[in-house]
Length: 298
Image (cartoon, rainbow, N blue to C red; front, top):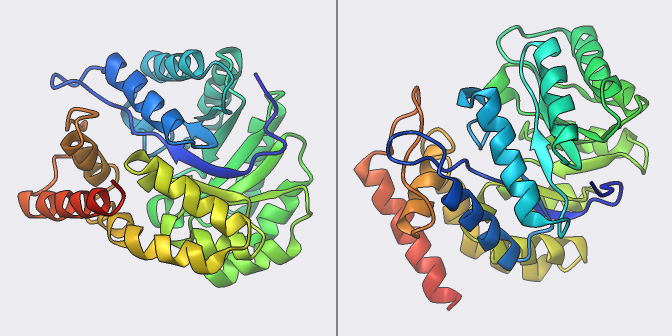
C-alpha cells in the first residue's frame, strides 16, 4: 500500500464489468484498468456505488479490489469502496479492503436509515477508528436521502484517518462553506464531473469521476488544467465533454456508462437487477456523443 496523503487529480469510479450471465467478468475488469492507466488517471476507485457495490457479494467485492490492486502494482493509488447503512458490516468491509492492499476507502453516507448528524458522526468515527489507512467520506444526498452538513464534516475533520470528502450534493453554496471552513490538510474532492471546475476553483484537489471510465485521457487533462489554474482551456474541454457527462445520468448510473463502454468494446452491457438495460433511444444518444468525442480527439 502507498500513501494517499498527497492525493490529487482525476480518479475513476470504476464500473464493475459482468458477463452476460451476470457473473464477474475478470478479463474485462483488467481491460478497463489498463484503459484507465493508459489514459493517465491519477487514482482508481473500484467497488464504489458506480461499481454497483450494493449488489456485489462480499467475496465478489474482495475479488474486484484484489484484481485492481494486483493489476495496478502501485502505479496509482487504489481507493476501494466500503460504505453502507450497517456500521458493523462497513467496518468488516473496510478491514478487508486494508488487508487486500487498498490505499484507502471511499465510504458513502448510510442510506435509508437516514441517521441524524450525531449518528453520521459516530458512524464514520467508528469506521475510521477500525482501520489504519485513510477514509474518504462520500456525500451524495440525491441517492442516500442523507446530507453530510458542513458542521458534521468539520467535526469529522479532527477524527484520525479521515482524509477528505467526495462532495456530490450539487449544492455549490454548501460546498463553498465546506471549502472555506476545512483545514488545509482536509481534501475536498468533486463527486460530480460537471462541477469539477468550480470545486477545484474553491480549493478542491480533483474529482472522482464517472465520465473518465469512457474518456480517461480527456478527463484527466481537464482536471489537471483546472488544478493548474488554466480555467479557460479547461472550459473548452468541458464544453466538448459536457454532453457525455450529462448523458451518463440520463438513466440511473451506471446504466448509461456501461452502455457506452459496451459500445466501445470494453465491457458487456450487463447490469444487475434492480437495474435494467438502457432504453434504445438513450443508447443512441450516448453512442452519438461517444462518436463525436472520438472524431474530435483522434
